[in-house]
Image 1 (tube, rainbow, N blue to C red):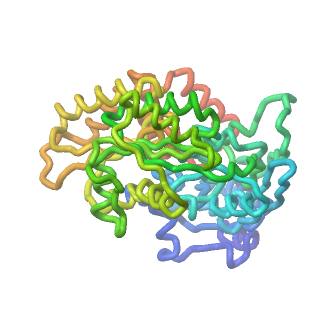
Image 2 (cartoon, rainbow, N blue to C red; image 1 turned 45 degrees about the horizontal axis):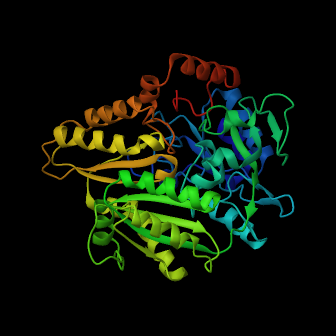
Image 3 (spheres, rainbow, N blue to C red; image 1 turned 120 degrees about the vertical axis):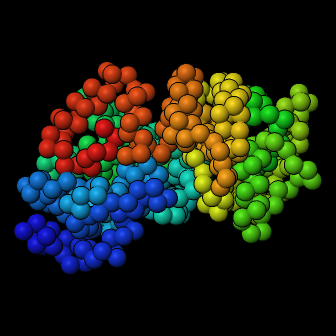
Amino acid sequence: MLLDKLKDIVGPKGLVTAVDELEPHVTERRGALRGKAAMMVLPSSTEEVAAVVRACAAAGVAIVPQGGNTGLCGGAVPDDSGEQVILNLSRMNRIRSIDPLDFSIVVDAGCILASIQEAAREVRRVFPLSLGAEGSCQIGGNLSTNAGGINVIRYGTARNLVLGLEVVLADGSVLNGLRTLRKDTAGYDLKQLFIGSEGTLGIITGAALKLFPDPGSSSVALLALPTAGHAVRVLAALRETQADKLEAFELVGKSAFELVERHIPDVQLPFEKSFEWYVLVEVSIDKSNGSFENALAQCADQDLLLDAIIAKNDTEAEGFWRMRHSISEAEKHEGSMLKHDISVPIGCMEAFLIRSQALFDETMPDATLVAFGHVGDGNLHYNLHLPADSVCGEPEQATLALYDLVAEFGGSFSAEHGVGVLKRDFLIRYKDDVDIELMKGLKKALDPANILNPGKVL
């Protein structure tokens, strides 16, 4: 019996069958999806993961790899058959090694992102991946979705931060790739297959990651802009003067900050008046150097800014960032929200926002745009708040119209949240046929029995 075999592998502490204990693990973070599971196993080593996979493969039972279950597309949630096994990696949470001279760290896949950041800080290094769920998301899940976050503009997505991976394949064999080499052209770069594949090609159990020098002090400023389009011009101006010192560049619409002020205690914008658009920017720089202030002054002279406030100290800077990170929490209190995680080329951002606003002014006139995101890498969280008495058309049609417009601009309907279940049909609609056939071919080659996270992505 599979249950007994799995219990022998992971021990009684590594097996969960009680319905109430399974509940948080069968539900998508926002409640958009709820599945069922026969059981959840929590292996404590790569060897145990491999043994679990072999046992499930022999029994023909599908596996759903799961980290912190903080994803927003249902990629880590089982289906409603009640037959799938959740393989949760939270017990695999060791920092295996850290080498400040090599600027690398090797970790278990179940390590909480914030724990990796802290381990790096202890040796005066930085692991720059940073996102709102960093206190609970796990690095294996971050890599499986190629997570983005606020620092992509300087350091790239999760894919750019990986030196090597350890992966358990569908037959239980282990790809041992935890080397920290920066240069290796000996054959295919196999680790890239598993980054962004959402556990459908293999189960990431360990990762060798890049660390970076501590950038030291930083300046944080909250800018008020006349239009969202001005953000792209300010970004270009700052990149010319600040180069790779630019850490983050976040665009936030007026309505998003209004939600935060309404629903989050002790939060208030520091300006005397309200503006339509804001940018939160962070630059690594010696605070005695006035180049950042001078760059902002030049932007103001060119009428790219209406106002700007530079944080005077760390407390004020943390307050600015708290406003930004509280947007998603504030949205929960507001009611129905039609959410989209999109990206367009940075140079097209202004034209896209004009076109999309005209689109929804016509089709959904009583919807309120709540837009914010990492405009420094073209990623926008384009959300529409629908009032309870809304007479707007079908939300599905609105989403389709938005994604069609995104495609027209050469963008993506999924910038950093992945595909999972909720966006699977859009992948077929917007990806080229050759892309889809290659993906299917990879899936068939690496998981011929379709036991790894079936029904996700494809």
